[in-house]
Length: 338
Image 1 (cartoon, one colour):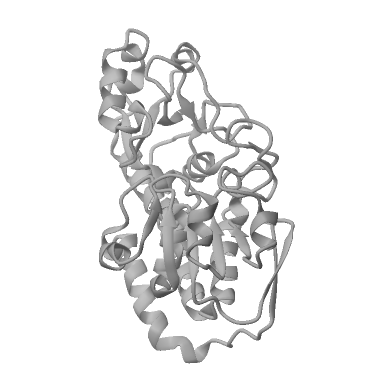
Image 2: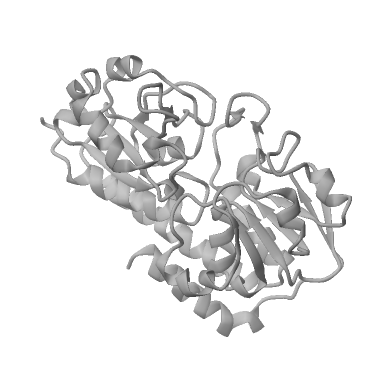
């Protein structure tokens, strides 16, 4: 059963099993990325800045609490199309500070600190907190990470999947839906175990490597690729594959000549519905790889070992787990004798 169907089932099960979960006791205090948040009651109006938080709330049956969304890379998961259509999209990318506060939110759930943080594109946490609007930042983007170094921040330690589970647990507690959060986490852990089992069936992958290409501001300049301590690196390590990029930055730019010299066994490219940059289009990525004089001679290109994943599957999100399954299955299907 695909993860998307499992998440739908989890939400339904959560509604029927809430009686088994201890309720949240308010006022609730939550420590979050250097800020202390206090909730007198469960928020009834939430704005999300980042698709990961949006779909996480949807997966816990909280779409009725969401009054505005923003920062989308992919279309919403199919099972949430109906509920998502009823919710205002404040912006495809970053919303304005004014647009967010106009929704009178009792919580702003933020995926990335460069949206709401010391140099936030939307604003600082202090700006929101001064208006008594708590901001919840996903721990996966603040724990053991310096977002003031590098374009998308720099990892001080490798991403830990527990930080994603922590987001689910804390948001479930804030909204008083702990049982739904527990069931969602259990489902995601089961998906992770499935991917590990698939990887165990693979050939010897100790000498294989990969590169994740997210996008490029222009196809004729260096691409944004996954650094060696971020979410894609976690995915590769889980499957026993080495990331050819050694930078600690989340999404550093690396030249194609350097990448070609590393000659990764697999190329993983992001598919997104956003069209901010030309290379957001995965078809343009494929065309570039197959026609550029440097990239077309890479083994992964010549032998068509190119794996396409949703951009959100490369982020700390509920989609990451299905992306990991897709990655494990694709790698298992390749003839590495070529």
